[in-house]
Figure: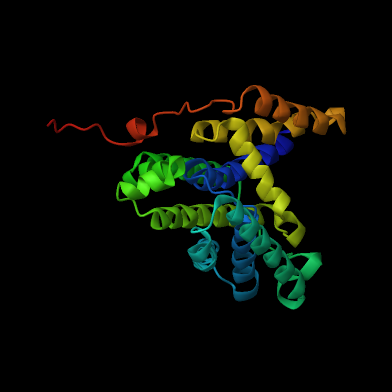
Length: 286
């Protein structure tokens, strides 16, 4: 395998790690299922790409603006949605994702329609993807161990019991939803400026479902497992490319084996001690 191909695979895996970290906040910590999360990746990719190619924005401000736009859209979508039952959340986000795809196809003069958005300069490289993935995973790990993270897990375990203990469940769900949107949109920015081309077919509901499968494969209660499964499931098809179409069969069999014989996922609830590693030692005893 050439170094160029290996670099390409690693960069794509790291961008996927960022996406899956966002899905972990939503599904792993609050129990909400979104089949439209790829639409926020599309918003990040298209808004940042258009700002740079059409409005001559610098790369980083364009990414910041794209994430802000995605969070604003996420607020409009999430405000009524997080109050619904989990299965209805899936349906609403599925519809939202398909609507975004339709909008991207309809406004051809701006987005390029089905032909896609071209001419995006290459700004993302392996180093930027690696640093971004480390920062995002660390931030999500700290969020999980924070007060808000523990409230998210309480809401996921028993919504009514959490409310009885004074937890504002809609606000906690909304916080997790918007954090997930911001992370996913940023991954879209990195993706657009790595591939230099995006089109609506890249951000359909199948992409969102694939991320949910990755989270369950690694362990829905484990951020470490989600990251590990992204590396395994992201790299496996590439390293088995010599098997042709059989690599997809092996991929599917592996997923089915884990789901059937290890329902808790690859790592179950095991987690790296993000809080102990990333926080300063508490020197003030009580």
